[in-house]
Image (cartoon, rainbow, N blue to C red):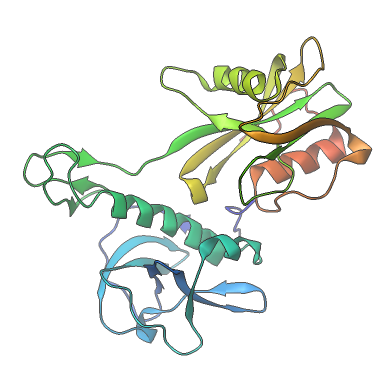
Length: 280
């Protein structure tokens, strides 16, 4: 998955350390992120490659800091350009691609919280933690993380695969949806499966989680066994199709960097687990 960057280590502890010459810069504009590619991999500009500007530290990978460019985006240096981030997901997944996803998530949050939602005052960066603080009324806002579920619905030998309706992503997926206020993650699984494909499930087995930084989401992956009828009733405003697939017939057309893709491949190779897959 995209966050699996070993042997590199992602450090997200808050810090106000000053940028060094070789640290990476995440600069966004209406056209995308400032970057280039080399041999199918993402390359972000270093501090020394850009003119002086306001930089705010986001995190580090190993010993290299990643900084957000604030204010008007800089001109692109030679060989760099602004590119839409969605198209970059097809590049080789590595620590740079993950850093872009995490950095873009934080950029969206900072951009959406420039002004206080309670009194309208201009927000400032928190001095001791990752937050936005209103100096006028004291409101403190933290980064948004939306919990959601990915569900591999199976009957032991078959798996339900879906396709989204009206989205740029057209590959096969699993049942998915967001948690609602006051709802447990397990209840989210049951509700989303019933809403999207009209099936009842039980015997939920947790697989693993994934920080899906492209949509500010923390995903919880579950395998869930069919209970009752296997007749699919499609939620047509969400999905364009949903069907049962035997393990040998599962298509390879799915995301290579997502929890969804890993769970599909796990079922293809092993079938559904009967207990938690990873004991940490």
